[in-house]
Length: 483
Image 1 (cartoon, rainbow, N blue to C red):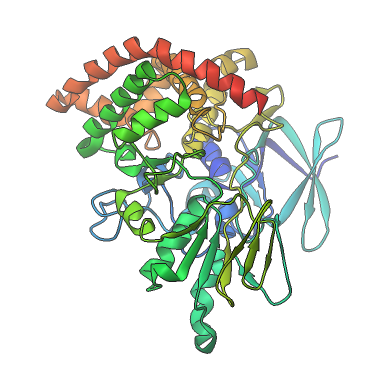
Image 2: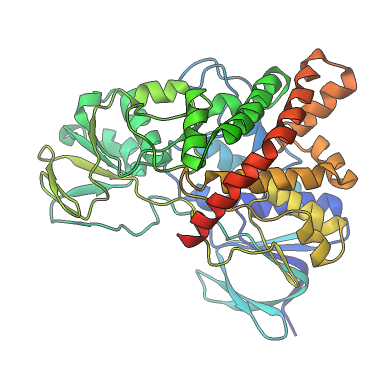
């Protein structure tokens, strides 16, 4: 006999697990939900992130459907000025604690086992759980579904394993250590070396410069340059809806005019819809990070950029790469920003979301992970067979490069086409705070706003450009699956 029983066992109380549970509570008022999570607080990898981390996307389109962030106004200062606010890491954690403690647990239908490890299921479907601090084990009978909210396997600098070695005496720190440097006023670094080309490295570079570090005192190892989503085109609400629709038109124009994914991204870049730090270097990476033009302007102040691939080892004053060695100032502080975030490219567990007695949460609209989780819960509660549910949305791939980018966009648009034809899903999208544009468009149509005039242009462009996007998407799919 099991120690506990539940209808849905969610492994992972991070953003996607919480978004799934939040919607399921509303859509299935009789179900019981149980969380098992290793962290001491809800929020997943946000518990481990560096202290100056912030959302890349507007807070207004992140989190759970039922609860807004406390502050969803337009920023009036800083590099994000004029755009919707980005919640800080501390704000995100406080938000998820509020979701758990003021929304989920008070329902009386949610149990939360923190500092606990999921240990698999027996052949009879009983799940095993172990308390991390005490080692106490218990069992949970799952009446309906196991929900795997760990697909993204998010890695952050404080928890990942380094892929390089360092000699004795070399100071290598995660970015989270930087705000503590004030405690050592007599041993401040004279030079910083940022390792990594992703958004964590960009956040670190912006933080250092805004903290007063001379850009000439920063060297930056960027193995690959990245295309970055211009945050201007990810803004919610009526004031930005025409901007969002311009992005849609531009994407299909680029698909029509491009021979491959690289060229499609170049065309989007020429229009300012995607940004890059160095306009002279063609990016080889695209990980869906969003950024403002203000942040790009700050990052371009760093001119000591090292493009020799990934670092293999570090010794005092030297960076060793696969084929070469680069000198850096003696006594430099090396900031490790090489954690990979999520498993871009193929994942061993990729596949359909609904698998008999198991749901694997994956992006239905890449990269909107909490929106995707909430929509998955809606589909679970409102449709019947796995076949029917899986037909309502294919999981989007976490592609890695401009060459593979059209694959994810093709899947996104195909899914959107399916949802537009389904009255239940269309009605849910029109009410969802997590969906970027559907609710805004529905409200503008209802009010007869002149801002909606561009919607027909978007629809015409989709009809014209979808064959081209499918052509590029299938090319990109072959590249992605061969990687």
